[in-house]
Amino acid sequence: MKLLILHSSSDLYGASKILLTSLSLFKKHGHEAIVVLSAKGELSEQLAQMDVPVIYMPLGIIRRKYMNPRGLVNRVQATRQAIKAIKAIIVAEKIELVYSNTTAVLAGAFAAKQLGIKHIWHVHEIIQRPYFLFRGLSYLLKNYADKIVVVSKAVQNHWSKNIPISKILLVYNGIDYSEYKSPAAAADGPRDSAEPQQTAQSESRLRGSSLKPIPIYNL
Image (cartoon, rainbow, N blue to C red):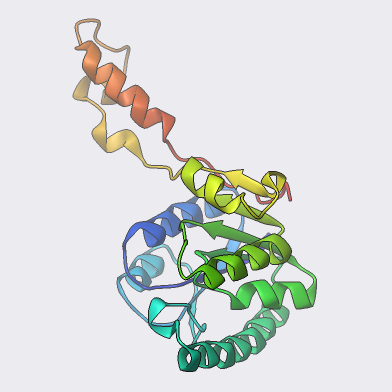
């Protein structure tokens, strides 16, 4: 499956790191992805190392500094332009699914809807204020996503106030726990029976958060 992935920043903080993890899993399962960012940054370097193609263009990202009348007009105009550009990419690249990473990216949801293709929204945030933003995003998530992936039970509980729980998929952020394994566990062969129980328990907790693919086919 060919994916178009839209992301709200080019840093290497939480949501960006999870994006890199998701991309690794998508590639492992045979999917092809193109990432769209609004600017170059540290994330760009990581994507280049993964041989993931990146397109740079304004995406009309929603930020708190735009939460005023003039700023909202600016974002509406920027989002309209982004929708047009994203639709052109979808058609030219024969994209089969649009994947929006964070609720700060709106344009992909509209573009996918207008072209009748699937859209996944990966939601990391709990947004309570301003209230009109929470209500507006709830409406968009409910009506412009085929599946909403959330990263925690708290995020799920927050957005399910206005969205059917059946539309929300809880996928905890995964980590590669191999670097935290004890030398005995990392070595070939059975675990040393004298290894402290605390270490085994710690690895068990890490294993519970290990990497899991997002089931993009089951929409």
